[in-house]
Image 1 (spheres, rainbow, N blue to C red):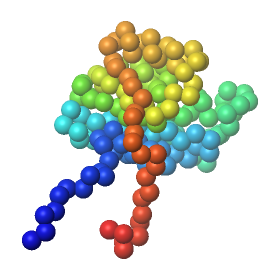
Image 2 (cartoon, one colour):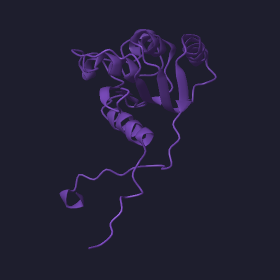
Image 3 (cartoon, rainbow, N blue to C red):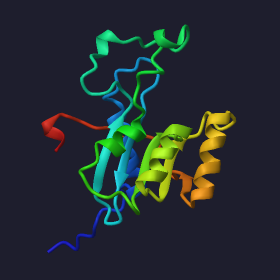
Image 4 (cartoon, rainbow, N blue to C red):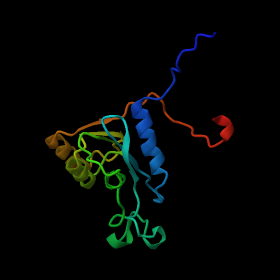
Length: 168
């Protein structure tokens, strides 16, 4: 009988949950920015996921997607960010002690919701707006509230998902 050993090239928990966040982002209708988030409890169970989009009941075709112009003619007053959606879409449990994986470091408004919900760690992929006041405010609040944050450390640069049943 062959001496089989377990696979060694499986993805880490961080890669797995960030992958779920990135997959969630693909549901976003936003033509310029797609962000996803995934909330995980202490037992490594997914308890919430979300992406940036309009609130339930608001038709994607009835609202603007512009990034610039008069405020009400842009997407900004209407879009719900991925982190807030993940919190609001959780499975109905207390999020105290959970982690949130997010493609983009959370803004100050999402940071308030993260802190209020009891999430204790933020794991992010990109912090491309780190020099702006909104994201400086986020870090100040997270630090004061004792919520840790870190950039995900992946050993892979990409994943390929195949829907070809021959690949299963």
